[in-house]
Image 1 (cartoon, one colour):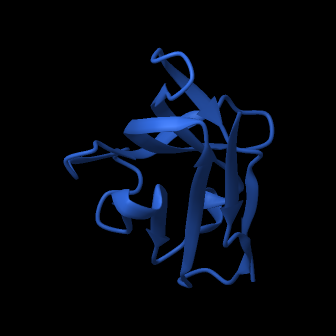
Image 2 (cartoon, rainbow, N blue to C red; image 1 turned 180 degrees about the horizontal axis):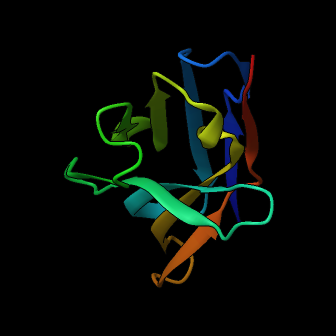
Image 3 (tube, rainbow, N blue to C red; image 1 turned 30 degrees about the vertical axis):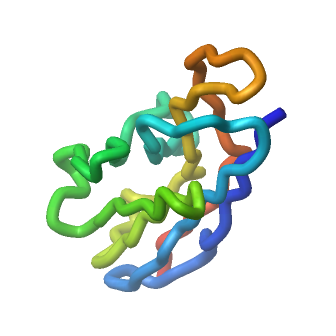
Length: 121
């Protein structure tokens, strides 16, 4: 079994910052890609940022220059530093990992439960 524990969401004023964390544990041999997605009310889930095991990041155009994704491979933990937050960033943020299961050796992916980020004055 795999667990993803997300934390760091909350209410912040426009221009503020938040740091999301995603800690993975359980039957994980290795993690390839860690990604953050978000889903606003009435909208589809979209990729915000992702990072490979080698540390190569990818960002959605809407967050480039404001968000920074990182990971600590030793801790199986990923982070999303969000600066200069805008009301349009309001959404539930989900962590997703692509990993190789220790028990089966197969590659699969897993979603976290989501954490709410609200940007409002």
